[in-house]
Image (tube, rainbow, N blue to C red; front, top):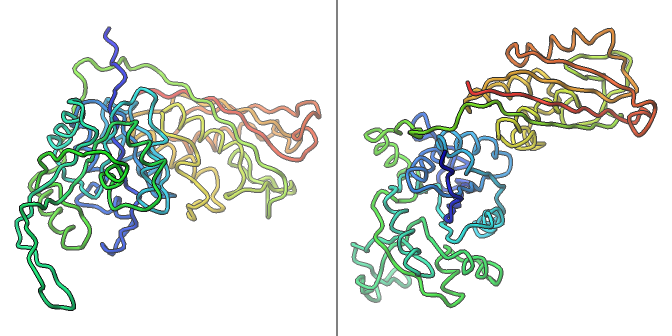
Length: 400
């Protein structure tokens, strides 16, 4: 059996833009057809040679970005990761750089808004880097006559033969890009300008008219028109796919006593018991199950999909978390084998309601078997004192 080598190239896909000028946002999650701008961008990224792919998403949309990425990745899902962007494009790219694997030599930075950029443009940038250039940027010649204007008056003409419109992906040697970012003292409009300011010469390679940036509503209409004639193709799978083996994940969660209202634990309400604090209902059992399932499927963790900046999950109970997790696994091509979870708490007493809890949790997971056990930890630690509840879950998932 052959082993796929670790890639030496990474593509950072910047998808953290607000979409202010587009009038809809975040921009990367606006639909072109049944797929988002980001999904179309990633489809073309994965048509190139295998590379580490880091998606930089806006805060709160990391889970959506990961879903798009896994749909586009096919059998390259292990090359994908998602990080949270910053307040500026430069800080977002820096977050992507921080997530690069140690083996990466060349880095391409691509704007998700240039979602129809053909794979051939990526290939040209990579080829230039492999020839030893410090950086490479795809460009298009400027075809319009360019005038210099001052106070609404034309004061001169710019020689367009010296001009070119820069596109993405812009590629660089990793060491050069990292050093340029560490030493940057100003905000630049693109990465090539930042690298040039650090004293490096960047090569121009042929761009493509389809690599335009979706910025305005007119751009969005243009992209939608092109997509209508060039729909997203099915993601090809490997001729020698990896064997369909079970995958195991572990999840833990802890919540302190001190919340408002009633106690919710293992999907059940426990009248008369002190509530747990948390963004949702503080159900440590359900949350540990979510983490274990997401870990087994390689889909991140509970913070990725159910962060505190997701208001729809404020006060939500186990059924909402588990049903959404079940759907996420199905979208990624997995089904749940079984889940086992242990509760560590002084109260409540689970013995009389264990079967009820297992039935509720199983139903929320589409009927997958769930077993629940409980221990008081013999009065030791914060759980033994009754200060909080801890839960530990193990999940088995299988290819659908």
